[in-house]
Length: 115
Image 1 (cartoon, rainbow, N blue to C red):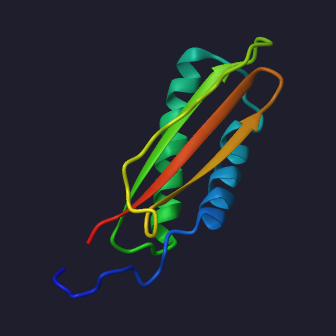
Image 2 (image 1 turned 180 degrees about the vertical axis):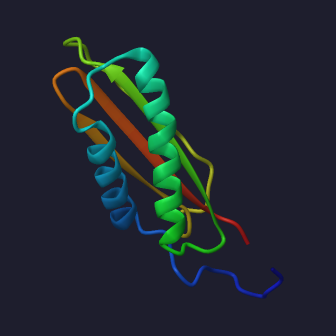
């Protein structure tokens, strides 16, 4: 698509994306018990569902990246970090967290503008 636009019509909205991610995590993991094999499939399912719902929000010309981690609750601490090299005015991210008695899930969704 060749245009002379230098910015998006619909800028990536972390609040909207976080709302989508939180609802997907809740829907998929509501009755889940930690099992490594099941959680691997659920992490991919969560990522695919979030991607399709975020794309439906109409963030044209944005590349959407979704990373989902699911782990077992064992009275431990986890620290997840990321660094990105991007345009501070156009690119952004959202994150959502879900926990129950046996598992935790963290998902990060990045929106990177493509000219």
